[in-house]
Image (cartoon, rainbow, N blue to C red):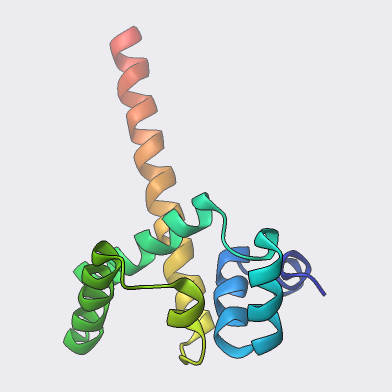
Length: 123
């Protein structure tokens, strides 16, 4: 199955599925290195970064916030490689997917509010 098929069958985002596969599947990591389409595209990297930033800012667990902050610091310094970073690490794909969906919902709400303001100004 492709990541898209897995995402569709499990009602999850494709970004969450790719992150999980990079975490647990040496074969997928190898294939992703050989075929860039299997890895993250720029939009998915941006979405994943948004989830990490929101976790860093709003997570209740201070250790989780600290780890997200360290990850973002290292990302800015260019120390993170997505294949090395996710490979071998364990994380809860369902929590990641839930956070990912929340970020999308917040982005959609913000877009709707902007459009409402633009409609009011136009009227």
